[in-house]
Length: 237
Image 1 (cartoon, rainbow, N blue to C red):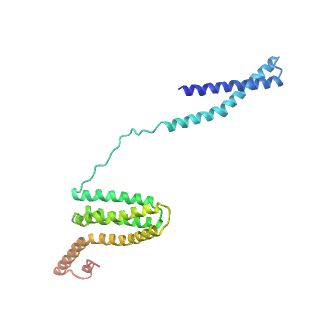
Image 2 (cartoon, rainbow, N blue to C red):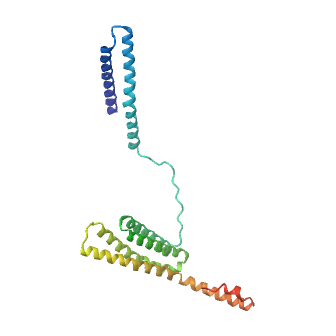
Image 3 (cartoon, helix red, strand yellow):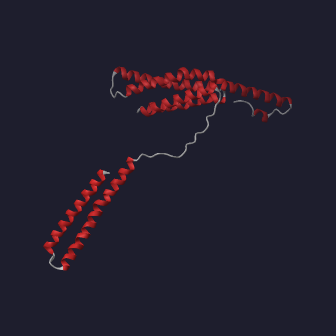
């Protein structure tokens, strides 16, 4: 409040000085000993004061508004609604939680590492890993395989990416650093292939069930005398 009063005081003093200067100038060019001269000087002084206020007052007002805007923090008073968490059972929920944690860390590494080639590989690893984790929801029987993937293969891959990130952030080249970074880069290709095979293996049970259903369907079609070109459509290619 004291600071605001001080600014107002400075503004008032500046206005007085400005009016005196205009009045002195008018006294040199206008007949101040006549009523017309006095009125003319007064009109010029008022017009000058208005111009001064427009030039400095408007800018001052905008600065004060901007200062007020940034000094007062925004507070969200709207009530927040959170969607209820879906539970798929303790084992599957644990898979989902660990998977989300791993995806978050890989996302951080993706943002931290500048190498476009590494980014591309991280993105592919995240895409496959997410499909592996989500399979636990659709087929809980795959939980043991997925748990092994989350307990070793994925954490080890993240560990290698963290090592690459640390070395890359040094901003220097060296025989050991370059060799290690190159080895990690090659290892990521191996990890991508392994992750794809892991995902494919999770569908082994489903593929077996589908083949069994197809065999049963073909047997029934032959028994009912309905086998033929239509029945061949049920064969698994």
